[in-house]
Length: 76
Picture: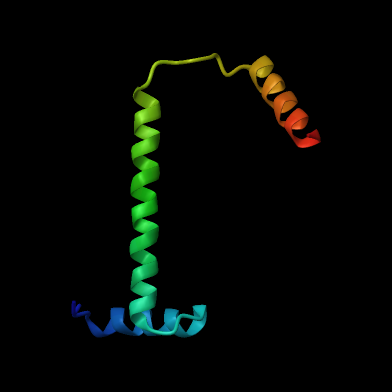
């Protein structure tokens, strides 16, 4: 796959490759694509969660119980 970029974007990519320790511009672009895939998955999960019925009221008591469960799991 070949991608044509205007000079300003090519310079930006080249700068990112140098500054962020990528070996090639292809490596940088692959990382951008992976991050975009992750964002899309997360968005899908958030939308799925927003559309699901409420399971519990997230009040102070809920978070206190949650903290207690986390502390207990950390002691094991």
